[in-house]
Length: 96
Image 1 (spheres, rainbow, N blue to C red):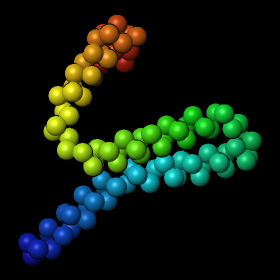
Image 2 (tube, helix red, strand yellow):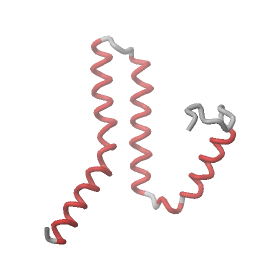
Image 3 (tube, helix red, strand yellow):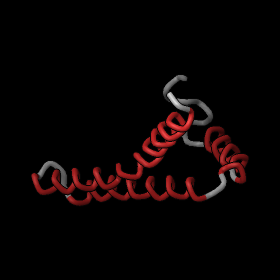
Image 4 (cartoon, one colour):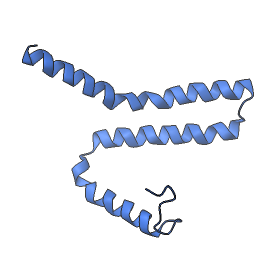
């Protein structure tokens, strides 16, 4: 393969993998609306999941927009504090 063709293929693959999670919120919303209409879920149950999917999409978009290296140490510190002082008391319930 030509080097130019490889670069284009790699770029397309990375783009697809990077933007794929952005479409999950829309798919989740469509499925949950169908579940509510079919009576499998009620509206209040579905609203929490839809809000979570939308918040996840927003965070993903912000991660794309911001330079992550500027905030990496802050994210590590927040994760450490949550791990040490969270409800589980520093013990992972999954025993990892």
